[in-house]
Length: 144
Image 1 (cartoon, rainbow, N blue to C red):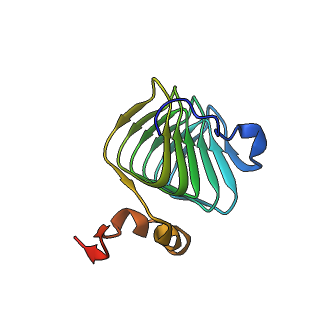
Image 2: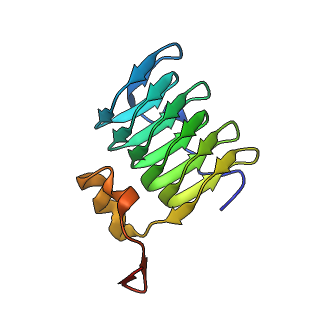
């Protein structure tokens, strides 16, 4: 689970439709249906139906909801990934994680709590990007 992953998806394999450049600053809520790459700064929540990539120079202050999230920059906020979250060696995450799968490379920084989601939480991300962060935790079919 921890360490160098052989299954890391490279940027070349992902068709990125939306890009925020290194010197760009965006304030507000960002929503996208296709893959997004952030190399600049975002102050606000981000929701993406596919891959969400934070480049090495990227900095996000806000929550992220996406199918898969790859972080090699800095994120200060909670992340809800219905698929995989990859925290690469240059990545820094200060916030809580809800994900189906988690990969943390050596030298990455993570300060927060992680909840591994089951497959039945996938509908939360599709229907309401914020609800996965607020979803009640279940233990043996019973809510805590």
